[in-house]
Image 1 (cartoon, helix red, strand yellow):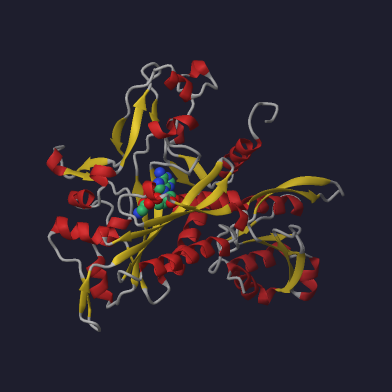
Image 2 (tube, rainbow, N blue to C red):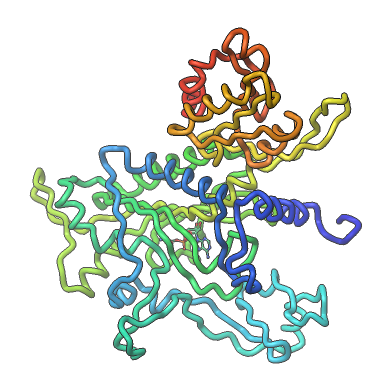
Length: 457
Ligand code: GAP
């Protein structure tokens, strides 16, 4: 504990949330109205980072011959959610405090604090022990809305709580349109909504978030092999994008805790400042989803294998990542504070976001060392040359050391400085964010040099 009673980890989380706001990664939704619980807005840097994460996932998953991409509607026929089991099973147990009216998930009382501001620091479990809570009752997490002007139950629809169902119901459409043969997959990125009882930990548990889901359709009997394959692939994806291995962990769901559809399930967990938390689930969903949609729609969703003349309901291996949660994990993973020398020979603490160059929201910054001797003109030309290819920032204000620090804070991997030597030999200095080492590069090679670095060549 520190002097003001906060733990070092909660301080770290506060620093990350504050940097996120200051540098334009994440803002509270509707902030000027006091914010909306469980909803966040991505600022200029955050939008770019999120887009880069989704693009890296999309390329990884769909730039291969056996996976197709789709973009299904958020609103779906209400029967979908009966078939999926969400109407019946997508519930959390909820209790209310009779005294302060706070609402808690009955299975998370241990982690919760009393809602009465007069009892600062009091655990909710104490209130429960004193008998202040109502009996637990089931609360469905789906957001309900109505199609058309009349708010009647017959017009009720739900905002999708997962993107997966849009894939299941399109299984045969995609298979026949793309002439895929089993095994093959369908991938999708999109918004999902859950009316979480308690939102918490910044982007970790929100009511509106984005998922990156892929459903891989396989022949029954080959499912366990594909399950292992996809477990390995998905872990490597996070590591390949710079996640520290020791911060990643597998959590296998115990048999009695498996979701109603799953035969086996593992979570990839990341060690956040507040503890380990799931960022992606890999599930063996068996033939549950297609069988249920067959039953509820009355339409066959069986696959016919031309080669063997067999007809069967495929098993599904699902990889289900949160884009928003991955964003938060990549942000936390990148955050670092370290000692760095200042121009006058002292040291200072620099805050640096060590994103993989592929994910970095700003790829390069261009600085004229001084605003004279033709340096700004060369720097502007270099900026214009780079701009169609990568996001680049031009900065000519303040000492160059300050400019480096500003870029470190948003994780810009390369800073390009135009100095007096540039005037003599047409080379520029490239300074690396992580090592702070500098190298001279011919300015006509700069673009291809940076592109190779960004693409990991
Ligand atoms: N189709 C399966 C499915 O949706 P899930 O474990 O409920 O499985 C998958 O969700 C992923 O979606 C999680 O690993 C997490 O990254 C993300 N996720 C789920 N609920 C979330 C929430 N309330 N806020 C942010 N991300 C969430």
